[in-house]
Length: 193
Image (cartoon, rainbow, N blue to C red; front, side):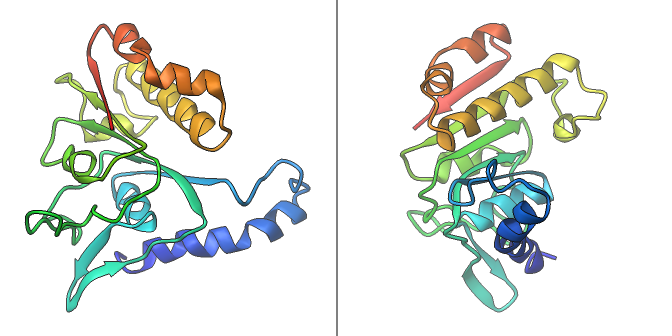
């Protein structure tokens, strides 16, 4: 599956013009401004599709990057030692080649914050749910996590894609502000680079 998932993203992207035509969405879909988002294994898929390299068996530093992607959001991404992600020190790590805008939303967990820490600037943002009730399952929007967690995640994701795909100044301003920290009473910590 680690080989196939990023290819699934590329296959869907290749079909977007046909899908848009079939369903009468050609006027609403801009295939040159595409974003991807995913949680857990979906976060692996997103991070590899935007340029992270992985070690898979005998393949070392394998890239599945799709240059048609403009922006990404990874919910609860994996750190080194999981799903083929690696960190050999210095610039020899899975996230070194990610140049696109990427938002990570993480909870306290094994190395969930490492992808943001390792990705090079600019255009990177992390929303860290610094709250014991935030777990890996929090990002399943049908989980029993507090409703406000889902509201924060949803609002941040929409603002992220509005800013990076739609180039909306109001979304950029919201992301650059302390609004998320304030509305969460400090339970969400925001980092940018």
